[in-house]
Amino acid sequence: MKRGIINPECEGELYSCKNKPIKIIGISCGKRSAYSCAREDPVSLHYLKLALKEAEKNGAVTELIDLRDLTIGACKECYSTCPAQCRFNEKNFKCDCYTYDDDCIFIKDKMIRLEDAYGNISKEEFFKYYNNKSTFWPKDDMKIIYKAMIEADGVIFASSTNYYGRPALMQAMLSRFCALDGGVEELWGDGKNLDNSIKYSKNSKAKYKLRLYGKHCAFINCSKEGDSVTPNLMKACTMMGMKIIPLAVAYRVNWYNDPTHREDTAESKKDKYTLGLAKHIGVSMVKEIKKSPRIYGTYLNTV
Image (cartoon, rainbow, N blue to C red; front, side, top):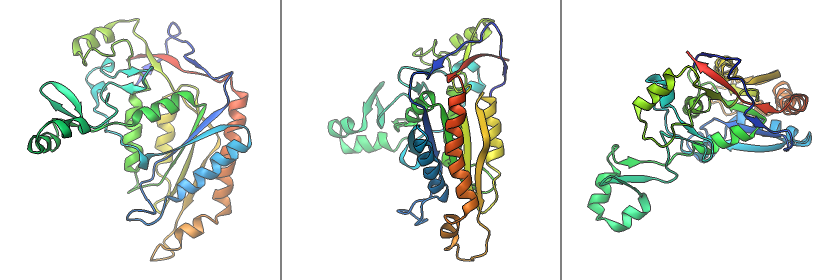
């Protein structure tokens, strides 16, 4: 998480949604699936759909993003070398650690789409490149998240608690928010030139965009371990300048009453308390957005 100060000389408004329909996105971070090992979808996804449905009833446009459907690479932590090493392009919604829309392999100083390479080189060569982590570059879908976050007025995160921490899909996504929270656009396309980054960072007038500043957020969690995810997630969101709505948390703890766990999902979906909280999130978020100026983003001077 970045640290910084908001400099009055750098304050500004980056994005306005005043004349657009209210948009709320829901991000489901569970890996569980009815078509995989668990044989069940996340209960938090059920709650999330209820929240989004209530938001729609109150006039919002909604979008459900299921992280199970996306390929998101891990953050490469270039910011830790120099703040300006983290770059973000607002036209294509990408950070420059991951710029490829398709699976590619690196052959003779060129990036070639996997499908194209398969038909143009021998199978022996193809699998040599494909099985080498240095030459195989998988596609990255984080641009879908970036675009949705910038365009939305609010976001609802739905997750579980895995071994008292964030689930893997959520953590991979959140680490990549670094690009939204200060990624430099001015240096895009220079091949991660470190000298350029150092020069930019030493400039006292350098500006870093907090692109999520002012956007609204809420949280849904369902697990057997209690909700130890939301408190830290709240901290991350507030450090990025996001606004937590009133009664922003819908949670459900599945106690170990059934040793087979087979009754957990059914019981969770009947829990009137959690169901009520989930629905309230959808209603409340629309109300809070309507009361807000719907202008988002500001600048940061990192320290």
